[in-house]
Length: 187
Image (cartoon, helix red, strand yellow):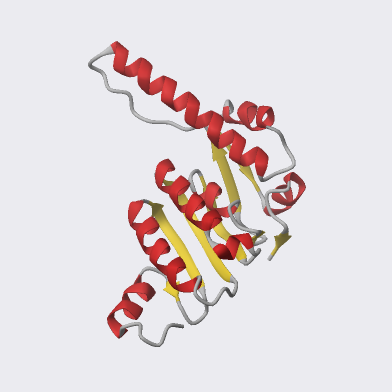
């Protein structure tokens, strides 16, 4: 840990689930831009000594774009490039949280956890048809992206994930996640 880190910042990190001594990050609750901000700061510190970091996830999901930002930050780090990012899922790994779980080099999940994948959704504005068409077009692009991310991090292809999304919410236990190649190990 950086010896010059202030006590206030250390406490702030702990309140957000960042333990600098144990080199771990907890993501609980809704994924949003605040999680990106704090994770970015933590990674700036963790990258200084290039030791492994563990990200523990227990979340119903949250904002898709924030999850993408966190995934990209993790994958851009020198820790990821040297295979030192471990992601662990506990309890619920759902919706946008699934993107975070698959962003690790080594991916684990507890025996009693559930991984939930579903189609991206949003609320359409009711006032203008052309705006609704634009929203639907963008949602389709996001869904293609989501399916590609899942295909790149599993044994299944984009078509598999696209077909699953049409079934509303699909839940996988840890054993199924091993079979699909989503995780490497059951905790």
